[in-house]
Length: 555
Image (cartoon, rainbow, N blue to C red; front, side, top):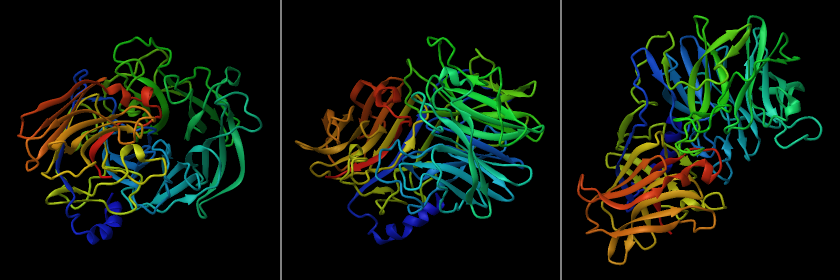
């Protein structure tokens, strides 16, 4: 985020403090999804709540590093550090410069897919796919994982989910999901490929080879074998990958070989992790487990990070896919994350590591307030694609935003960039509040707080020009055929435009209530018992999580 701020600094300095535009003085967040109490010797799953999917983690000395997917958001690929595998601190973003790569003006569910992080001889590597971008698969490198990271080096091979493995002799090998050799035998038929990577030239060398065609049991037509990683233990090379797609049929598989290039044999006890066989009517389910990566601690114990979801009803969840952690046990030379038929525990014993203090919680109940007075945004905040010009600034007065003529629903269809600063929603039960400094809205303008799943599914509560002056209004977009600005659901005249206005979304699973206040603490309902499930991927489609934050539209 530091380089992101520097990259925009010249443009921001050229603006007259964004004079005449809107100012947000603060954003508040409070979330609590309940669950069992956590003792000092325990931790809670997920370890990183909210839209942090496809986790990849490694150990370097006493430190652990984690990276997750971001798709069409910028900055991309957040980098976390921890010393206890439980308490994670975001230290930067690998894609943090607007010119680092071209996202193209495409849907939010495109962009930066599953990344993998690795380390060798003092250099950190992230392999990633920019889906629908020019180039496809790439590598970025850094000496310091907090950044700066290099510009992408494009690798030129087909497929997604690349992962780089360094062998004991220093050779490097890339595995990834790709199309199989020959004709597709069924929908979702994919393969895991291997090719050597030359560290000196940062190029792929030698032949590409299929390690897995289809999955563990090709006769069962397993779908979308993906997210592969290689690791080594006791002279065995282990290949792990997920099958079944990234939904409820997700399952993690394991193979092994004495040679890095195979042949690889699957374990007879596969999968090593899944929740797909459990009763779908169970209370407080965790679903869609998979996309795991294994980590060895200094003491020889093993753990695994993986993605999973926490539905509130059926397969509906607004948070996207989250990052979980479980210990690994070994059975006759095979790793098991969770025995078949067992539920993912939400609370369990911490790793045998010194506790790492955490200033910004990433799990459990927490709350925070952001007043935007620092010279740069905290690294958790994002925009939809990289800004092409400066339209926001932080400082002593708060967050200044220059409204965009592109509404939230106008992105991805050849339009420009919405003026929207996004933070991930991290609880199903949460209260989101933004305070807008006094200003006089112009005709057609809407400025306020957005709650956003994607271009076609979102809510906005904001201040607009009504029939009798300033008014607070709620807009909703629930499908692609509705106006890009959404449809007005409720409106209420404001007594004046010379006072700050606070706007609030209150979420409880599938329920959404909306409030506003012109006097501190005097909340008035604008709309209640709305359907929050339209923010779920089950309704909206795709595979990202909901975000929220300041938004400003001016036609």
